[in-house]
Length: 529
Image (cartoon, rainbow, N blue to C red):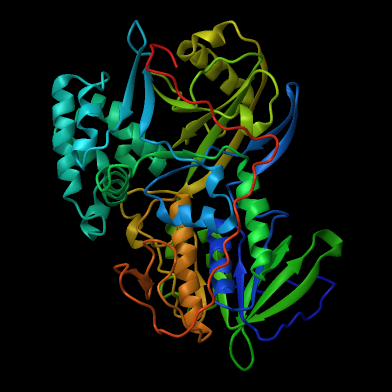
């Protein structure tokens, strides 16, 4: 499946003890490398880009409004994302992505003649009563629709997301069977599901949808409380992650693209990589007892050694789904809340990113559009013509504000496609090639393609790699990720040995960069955000 590609510059780079090589410096690869290094395994991380972070990154833009630090997309997490919370703590960024005290999502519907604002919120009562008052006051549904939604939620709570039969059914079909109207699906279920699954209900696996709603909304009262980074994503997933990796002893090599993984003479593996770019690129060989491939599924297919998977072509059947992000800078504040969701408009979610971007005057809004297959390739001018009037409909203050900058970021393969049947295609971390493991949000974590799934996959892959190098481990410090052989087991099951293990040295909390300021608190409910 692979073939090493050599340049005119070639040298052998063999280190001993051989330890582990992690290919890919996104969240999954960073997690795997940290876990391996914390267990005392000499670890090298290879990343083809000049930075870490994968698809959760930032870049600088010289805008007419001034120099901005721009996130490629809007990434949030929930309180139920316990593994990602561990990751933030491990890299010293726990205080930089605060969670809401309680779930509170302003939802503005501009379809009626007079726009109406409602809130999706919870109280402190036990599940499922924690959502009862919020649903009862959710004005975007009729009283009958609210009652039927409550019954559907209770039915959803009774589903087992791990049941393979659920993977063959689409979420919309199940919702219609529970008496949910198309209007209710748009105003409630898709409002949450599209953003978390990156697919609308007719195109989403019921198994993955059940995972999202059960874990976030129907397991713990605070499970769906939303966390938003108040610093650029690059500060978390590149700067702080890189600092934590190096402090743990990981040899981080950026601009190093793995080209092949082959069996090494005498056992173990050789990762063939090109370091550098263009005519200055050098071919190096990294020997390892374990290799973690934390790259997208199509790259993993090309790198896996022969025989690693019984049906490697199935990786190519895992589709991808796009996310489109629109960035608008106004000359004055037009939004008084940290974020809101929209109905009756093509706009989905809008976030205030003024502080993290370092904007000194005016306001910078990021519009996040999931499941954007129909618009991902539309020209910037067409998107501007479509969305600026929509933002003016949603935000009265935007009607008189001057637009200083409008630009677009596109992730055509932002996530794996969560359509029905994808569950049987997602591979476990362990492969048939001893010591070669897979990681990535697209692997079989039971979660949709989220940062939580990425951390869980990296943890599981590291555990399998530890077994391959003969290292011992105890229960993982990463909540909810105890696995054996690629299958999730209960968290109270121990590791393969009770022997000593290096304790993870967590990074101390890191101050936010000067450009970052805390998000503004949302005021009380009003008719406009």
